[in-house]
Length: 487
Image 1 (cartoon, rainbow, N blue to C red):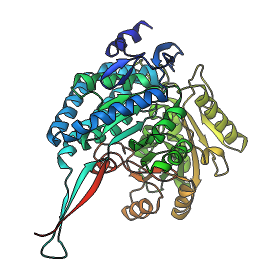
Image 2 (tube, rainbow, N blue to C red):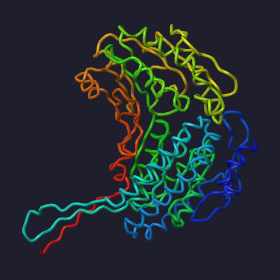
Image 3 (cartoon, rainbow, N blue to C red):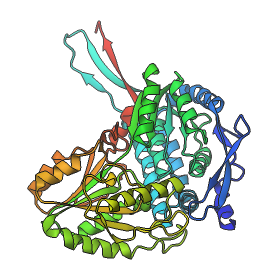
């Protein structure tokens, strides 16, 4: 596509290459894999298909670059990150268009993701200066106890396709700020954005070997190689719970430090004292963001009986008016699903719900290619698959509840615990329910959870560890206790 080739300007000759040790080169095997446009199926680019051999070279480059990078002052590392941040912001439009091409998300969301992702780089540039230690009162007068923070070492990051820029910066920025070096494996569906970020890091003066990018179609093979390498001291992964468990098992022999942000099944509770219009706004903003393909998307909407019908009516009217289309169309509000498997899953879960008594209020059908109509289902029940499985598509099932206790029990009846939302004007209820929900994050009358200043992460099978905020540096730092005697 001619428009895509214009948007590929950040990657002249780089698309079919990998970034290792400060050099752009082909994968060791010489193989490439194709990246396609979800909106049209058009071929976008052929990308270097890395193997464990390339991973070994990337880890070697990161290991060699680590001593000099960790020896830099916090201010020097911060400056490199500030320069990277400035380069990202300056290239907002080409980065956004690149994301829309390869992920399918609508252009307005892609622009928002550039700002969101860049904010992590700016935030952790400043956190580099605040990696404070402690002085501890000693048990005897002739001793002094000091605790310092030191970088873990070579860190690996495996990122998903649904946020191809922000998930990179949310992992790479704190690692670099702490003094670690990184080997990044981006999702095979969306490697071009990660490669573009590497181009900008190079331009910003991030030293050779500090950031390495190894795209590959062999996610399992690359993941296993990163887990098996004793030089990799930290692995951060965002993706499915099944893959997260496999990576955790593979990391066990080396006791590699882990951060896992895994699947979600977010409940959205609307109580009878809620303001319905803001609740509908929140449900739509969270459910249909990136065509329902985010880990914190509303997955199960529970509405108290007294306001159930009114809520469904307002929600369905708004959803029916959503405009689907190619993400580059400024008027589009909902884009395509990422691939055929995703579309098949959505269709299967809707069919299962309908077969068990759910009613389609609006939508409920494929619209050609990878597009699925924004959908509202009513009369959903806990027995349906979509009550237990993450839909990851533009489908909003609505359940009815009667009491607060019933709502909390239904919301917690899942192995996942990433995000949850509730709408109520009763401050006591807001506190009770928020504390009772088994979730790492709770939005109360607000669905905007994503921000660099707050800790992002889940509980139960949604993983562990936190990204963003001052806590985001902790996974990349070791505490070292220094005991001075003979004072």
